[in-house]
Length: 190
Image 1 (cartoon, one colour):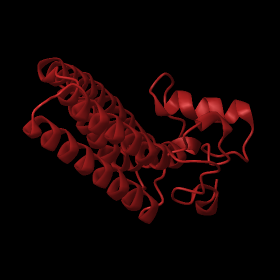
Image 2: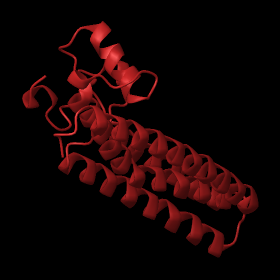
Image 3: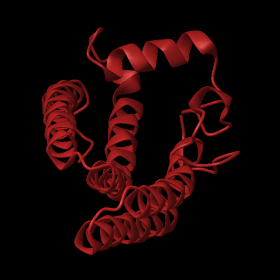
């Protein structure tokens, strides 16, 4: 594969995950505002809910702009995207690359560069999704506070954050191991 075959990012056909998060946070913010106004909650609760919702919307917009600027928008429906990694290669070869990328098969010397590229691309997109995840946590907190259940909202956010951190660390260790194997097979890269 040539460098042109795997240019950074690529174009996302259809909505991106980051743009859909903007829509979701605006909708969640409106729900939080209406919920806080509804049951006679205090002005402080309304203010905190709306403030969290506004910060969530701003975070989602910043996340979308950042991801777009570094060509790291993630497709909302990944299997329908023309940007799926290497759409021009045969499905068998694509499966082989993915199996090597996740460590299910040893990295072949001819695929080392492509595997490294796929892992870097995945990491770039994961990093670009972080502001959108922050927006999701903030909107969940705003909705929980507006609904009068701040403890449950905090518990839910902490549990989601714990799962996210654990999954991220697991993926990072696996990717680091595959990158080491790819460097052993093809040491003249980097």
